[in-house]
Amino acid sequence: QYIVYLLANNRSQAENSSYYESLKKKGHEVLFCYDSYDDLTMMNLGVFDGKQIQSAESVTMALSQNPSDDSANFDIDTTSENYQKVDDMASWATNEMAGEIEGVEVAKNLDKQPAMITSWNLSMARYMIRAQRANMQTSNADESQDDVIGEMKKMLKPKLMINPTHPLVIVAAKEVDQNPEKSKKVLNHLLNWSMASAGLIDDTKALLDHTNELLLEIIPEQQEKKSEAPKTEQVS
Image (cartoon, rainbow, N blue to C red):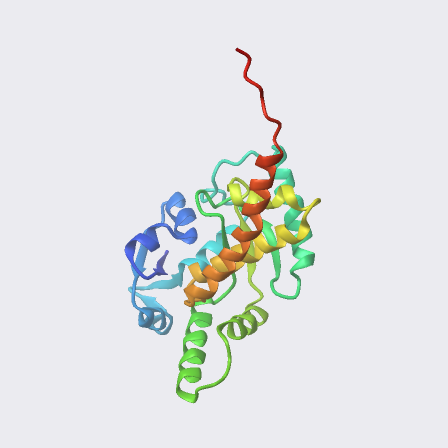
C-alpha cells in the first residue's frame, strides 16, 4: 500500500493528465497537488501513516514495466495495421532520438492522451529545474529555456510512451517511410508536450512556437492534396 500524488496546475489538468488515465483505470486513489512546494514536501515526507508516498509518474512507470499486471491497460488491437505501423515507428524513433531519450515505446495504458514520458524521480527533476530557473533569474544568466530542457533531457534520459490509437501518432507513423522528418517533428512535439505535462517545461510560448511550426508544415500539404483532388462534373 502506498499514497500516490500528482502535481498539476489545477484539478482539470490533473484529471486530464496522461498519468492519471492509467491510475484511474487501475482504481488507484490519487492525491492532487497544485502547489510547486507540494512536490518537495512529498519527497521529503516520504512516508505517511506507514504508507510510502510515490509520485504518479513513478507508479505509472512501475506499472508499465510489470507485464504480469495489465489492470492499468486499455483494450488495444495489437494486430491492427495502425498498431503495427506505430510499433515500427517506435523502433525507428528509438534510434533517431537516441541522443535525447532512452527510447520510444508503444503504450497500452494511454486512452485519450497522445503520449507521456516515464523516468525515475521526475519529482526531483522538477525541483532541479525550478532551482536552475531561479538561479538564472538571480544571476541574469544568458541561457535559454531550450538549453535548460536540453540538459535535463540528457540527464533524465526519459522514455517517450506513445498512444497507438491517437490520430496524431497514427499520422506520424504513416509518414515515416515517405516523410521521416515530419514524423520526427511530430514525435519531438509529443516529447516537449509530455515534458510540459510532467511539469518540466513552463515556457508555453516555446511550446506553442514548436506547435505552430508543425502546423505550418502540415496545413499547406493538406491544402495541396485538396487542390489536386479530381473534380466531379455534375450531369444534368
